Length: 204
Image 1 (tube, rainbow, N blue to C red):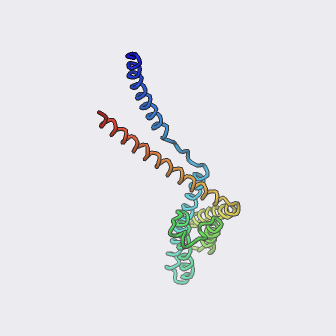
Image 2: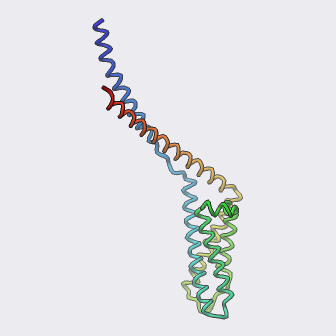
């Protein structure tokens, strides 16, 4: 009988140690590393290129508008350039996927709509003929900006037809759900560790 009691007393700390080690192992295993989605990473890079091309179009149109307003005979060209700047700003805002804008401009949620808007800005940037007083650097910057944005717009239209935009949104929702689940799991593990610490302190 005494031997059984001694065995029970010695086995109890071993069980407690095993429980503690298993809980620590579980806590360590809950730290999940999420690999970046290659589709979302590619879309972010492409969106960055589109934004840079739009910014270049804005710069070119602003320079052309200033020169047109200085020359009173080209005032309509200046107004045309101002419209191009405003629409290029909409292209940049669409790339941010700001929910406030998407709410009122549903067409910008679809890649085909974004692509057509980008093509329109590229054509507006390249539309007017060369002015004799323009510098070669400005003309080169205009060609680079317009053709780059035109290429981005064509890729957007083709990708929209192939439903790549729906794939991106599905991946985004999956990534958001995964991140929220990991955050909730970490909060639960943190709360569990706090409760275990309280039990150890209050244990006589």
